[in-house]
Image (cartoon, rainbow, N blue to C red; front, side, top):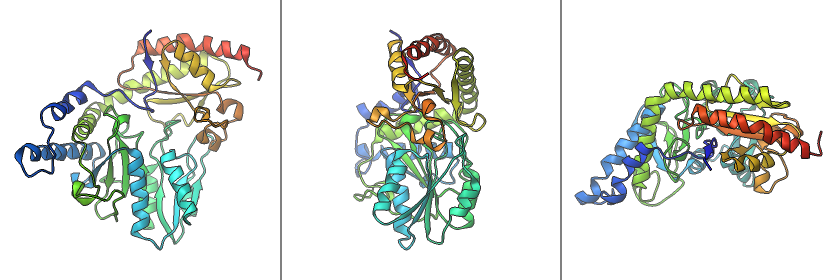
Length: 384
């Protein structure tokens, strides 16, 4: 049975070009980049090149502003804790109700440690109220942490405006850009973000590697203490092959971004329109104008998202539910709850997230199968 993979916000296929870039560092150049000898030391220049490739996709001022990490979660934790440690007298954090658990659960943990937190609301389209942000600043606000784009709905937040408000008040801004990097253009030379986290496996690099951008002049305290790696900013022997892979993935995404963004958005729109036309009581979750080009969250009223996924899986279609039921909770997605989506819709939400490796034939296949799947489940549903 063929596999139709439309779960790219969960993880992505490693690009063949990325694998090719990594292989020499798994087979031949496997030395430690910190070594004094040539065999190991020669590897360091390839880490430096990857740093430049990551800086380029962000349009960062300097490659030295990039610190390699293991994942987006590490980057988020490092940035937020760094801001707090750098100014211990300030005990207030601003974030949103729709952040990824990497941020939300950290902030909840920090509340247990005595920090105060403000969770900004979103409207029915998943958009922030800038006025609420402005009213939430306090004299002891230590950091603002807001994602660039939501992982469930794809809704893009006005990061440039948010950064300007933070800069006015001299409050550092941390951005979880895990879902946005490589999908939309970024210009960190012009956008005063203090910290930005990204993850390799969301843009066709391997799992287990990420990066944290730290703007020059931003206060920084390392989370992982150890050796001198990353200029003393992140201890631990570098994961060279994966770092090289991340650099290659960033270069690939940067080169093809405009073309791929248009092509993928057209497929996403075709999928949405086909579903809305052929399946009654289906609804798009999130503002249609301000979204990532690859992401759509669709609710199918009166049926369970997990049941939809199980039947989709029988046809080889891989997607995600917007519900947290798979983690043992009976509650729907915290993102959809924050948006005020009715319970009967929120429980039946499916996230489709496309990539450069999807094609028109796959979209047609999904559109062929989805009406029958939903019709079958609605016949069995006790909810009318």
